[in-house]
Length: 586
Image (cartoon, rainbow, N blue to C red; front, side, top):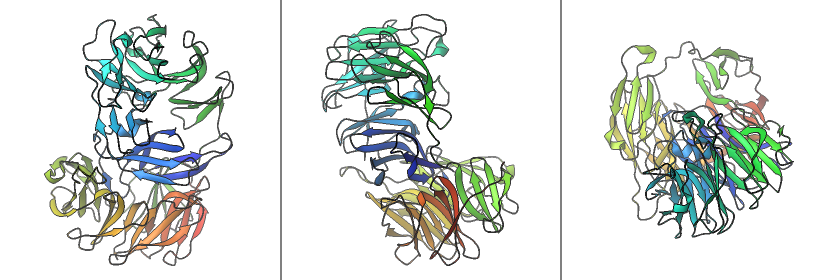
């Protein structure tokens, strides 16, 4: 995957922003705040090789200042990619529930999962007689409510609310919550006062298109606060509730039809009488939050913008841009630097001074390996330049947790890595990562080794290979000097990614910030020497990628104070020269 996931921070109500966390190959689908902790969910895709179409789940946790972050690779999740759009509801510091973000309602499954160890591992939640639709609310540490659809629906009971009185162990449907349409959202302001929202998707042309239920007795009895019963111009379901009192609140509609690519935007509504009268504002979005009593912030889609209102939705304005975006990967091919961006591919033959736009064309003289894609334990190999039929290879040794990534040193010579599974509960046995090698572009594979770690990224050059991942719950690097036959593990001083190795065995990593300024550390080592921090690129936002050219010059690309920049070192990383990237228009 090219491109970077990033988190930006504002301390002046959105007038300006700074990037406080970024990592290449990460897609962040949701972010929220619980107490003093910032939480984000997403997916990590290998950046230096090929990876599963689903990637690896990532849970990111940081403080409100944005200067301390912890990346968790949660265990026990389904490998279907649903976590990449999950919203997390923290009940206590260790108890949390997660399900698909509401703006995806109706388009993809919304399994409900629960963690009792602070997000390290998760298990599925079963709603008796129903299927989760994603809404969760916990008015106390033991009482939790969730929305779902009824397994055997009737004309008056399609959606409902389920309750757990024992912190998510046992669940039962609340008969009084039956709704003639699916419910996707629930919010309890106290142990007694709560709301539930939903509706039919407009594509079904079946009312109610929007329904809001309320309860004042803890869920025993529910009444309809409002619903749309006309079949013409049906509104979208209510997918998010944000009441600040039992009378005043903001609601977001949305949801997607089956097979649609989410998130799907809907309208923002406000109410001052407990939802009996809903006022539709001029703003649409995919997520909302209320600050104070009348400040509303809404995430626009597909434009990467945030709209705000300081008068309860009466007027809206768009916040300034949220930093640089679009940089994907940097590589060195056939004597030229090759830079991929959201706008296309660029090359430079003079060390990054001048760039030429080449679109999506193949770089002259570079013969790519066969196109290899991963899904579960299978590799799908499409021969380069369509010289033969696609072949699917199953690697049974990786069947338990699937494959993580595949990397190639030449068009024919490559390595594939099982994902492995680490950082689990003491009673759960860790799963090692199997290593496989190919010498014919991926058409046939043989198992060469087993790594006692989980693998998230890898790199391969000459006979040297590296794999980045975890042993236990600690970051570790695996290094091989014999084309993947034997390996030794090296502890990494901090969270690292984007492993890169040269044909001479020098290892380079991009490591996370450990200080208050959001700096990115470049660590260097060799096949036999421990890793150490080699240099810090001042001003470089957390997350970068770099390559080594044929004449040993070093190049790094990343973000410098909100703009894309390139750094060059001609003395083995001891000193660096940086400049902003000026790319010609596509």
